[in-house]
Image (cartoon, rainbow, N blue to C red; front, side, top):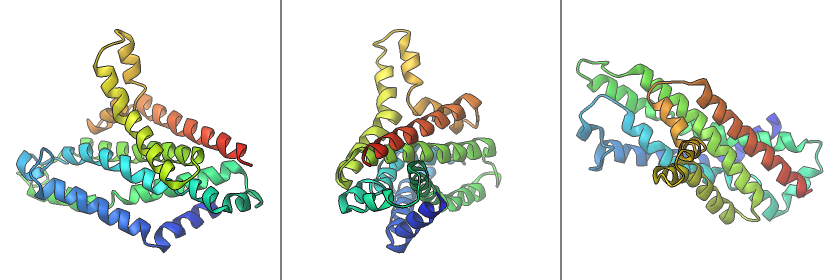
Amino acid sequence: MFAILKKELWSYFGNWSAWIIIAAFSLITTLFLFFFENDSNIFDIGMASLQSYFVLVPWLLMFIIPALSMKTFAEEQQTGTLNWLFSQPLKVSDLVSGKFLSVWVVGILCLIPSVIYFYTVYVLGVPEGNIDMGMTFGSYFGLIILIAAFSGVGILASSLSQNQIMAYLLGVFMCFIMYFGIEQLASYKLLGGADFILQNVGFYQHFLGFTRGLIDFKDVAYFVFIIGLTLTLSNHFINKKK
C-alpha cells in the first residue's frame, strides 16, 4: 500500500499536476473570499469568520477531487498498465487503499494555503483574535473527512470507468448527488417522514454539524462508513477486471 502511495504521490507532484491544482484551488478561493463581490467575500460580510470559506470549499472539491482520482484506475486500464499491476505481488485492497490515500493527501494539501486566510481574519478581528476557534477547527476537521469521502467516491468512479473523461464526469456527478442532490431532493418534502431519512443519506447534513463546531460521533461514523463502502465496492470492481 505504501509503495503505491509513494508512486501515486510522485506521479502527482512529479509532473506538476498537483502543484497546478493546489495553486488553482488557492487562487479561486482567494478571489472569492477577498476580491469578487459575492456572498462569500469576507470584507462584505464584515465578520471575523471563515464560515464563507467552509461553504465555498466543498463546491470546489466536488470538481477537484474527481480530477485527482480520475487517473487512479481509468488511466491504468486505458494505458494497459492495470494488468501489469495485477501481476505484481500486491493485493487489490492495497492497490485501492494506496491510490485512495494519495488522492486524500493531495486534497488535504489544498487546504494548507488557507492558513493565510485564518491569520488574516484573526488579525483583522476587533479585538484581534475575535474568531470562533471551535467552529473553525471543527470545520477544518469536517473538510478533511469530507475530502476522504469525495476521494472514496472518485476512486469508485474511476474503477467503474474505461477512460479518464468518463471517470471525471461520473465522479463529479456522484459527488454532486451525494453532497447537494440528495439534500435538495429531501427539501421538497415529497416523502413525508422519510425525508429526514433521505436527508441523512447525503453528505451535507453530516458536514453541516462540523461547520458549527460540533464533532459528533454519528457524523464521523457516517463518513467512515461511506469511505469503507466506496473502497469495498472499488475493490470488488477492480477484482472483476482481473
